[in-house]
Length: 139
Image (cartoon, rainbow, N blue to C red):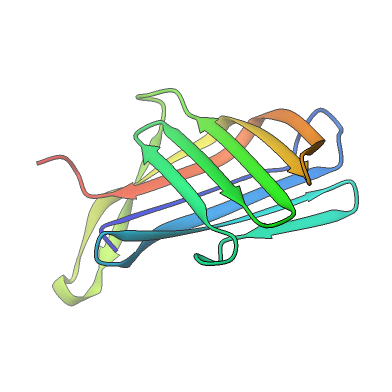
């Protein structure tokens, strides 16, 4: 695809928390993003567009995700230092070539906030998040 994003983090200062997300184009201008958070024995999954939608504002060096279901709300803000990303080639099999579309931050910052029925369940930050934005090079 011309654009995609993902991220994950496990190190929240010893707190039992894991966060993962991924997204990209779904239909035309619509995008789909899935979020999974495991914290304190709870597994929160968001991403069904009609049941538990997730809004994503993603660009170079930033990932902002907001999702909710009837019970849960998850807010994720992640960042990587601009210019510090590793740019990896992605194959274009039909053209038998590669293009530099994968921009990865291997030690980004990720903050997460989870509420259930309006009550704060967890809020924490990791400074060892893996973050990626796949996008075509600027023309």
